[in-house]
Length: 398
Image (cartoon, rainbow, N blue to C red; front, side, top):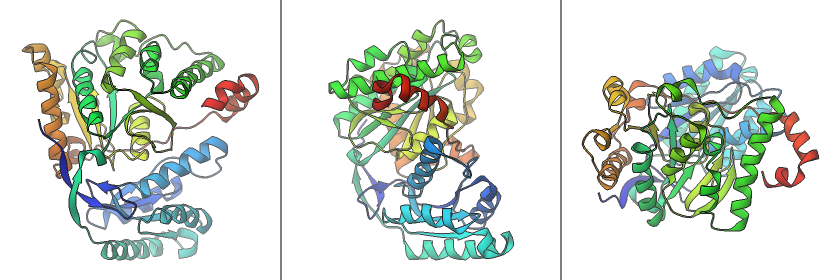
């Protein structure tokens, strides 16, 4: 299936979007209701709301702030209104977004004299931002795209159906110059050496293995056993963590691994890269969105409806039961791989056709249903301090 170009929204930083969302970003959770109300009053606006935002320190604050800044400067973002309780934080986050060239403004509830005044002024300011940044479509290449790769609720069919088909897509797009983001650090444990063997450099290999080692040491620190599978994975027929992980890395195909980067950051390389972020679906799609993913391919075995509010999330499944039982949530049914022997190239054609349609404006199931959410991961700063003291080599690489 040919998918070599699309019509997108060219931004001042050179990136191009497949959506043109005005965003309302709450920089702290006590402003989430106000951000939702402002977005609800402006057609097409999307609220970006998450827990916490005040009293955070260290890595927690870095990830929280960079995630919100990266959403405000996301290629699918037309303009952003930042909403805070007080002016210092709102102005600081808006200032970082402004450095990227994205149109941005901010309000603070205290300075406005309460939520009613802030609501009215916020709606006016957001409308002014939209008026000042008219949409302009132009031809863009697939090499401009950043694609997030996700799987959730995996079953025994995930690795041999949907994930395998995604791997073919990854190889095709990597060859075309696009960026493919593999993530979910817990989901590669047991198969990390196979992924590390694809590292483009020794530095990339070392960073990947160090990230896994840090994850395992954190589990030991918490007294947790990483080996047991989740109940949904067991019910889906998976036998071991290694089986699940081998299936998970198939999403990235066979191309070289060119970079490993941290949660809250954006990739600097093209081709296949690895985002060191937690595996739970909403947390990881949040990290993929913050990394600039234009869209996310999300293969689900037993079913998961969630999508990202800024990065359209294409739901795939190779499970015949899930394709039937959760049909309303599935964008691409790949169950014919199992039932009729459909080959992976044909399955990849089907995925890429949906990607082409999504880039052209077709809404995904999660967009249609409003099943979108973000959740910014919390960091155990105490563990990071202990790791820096006891394993400085691992800490330095992660």
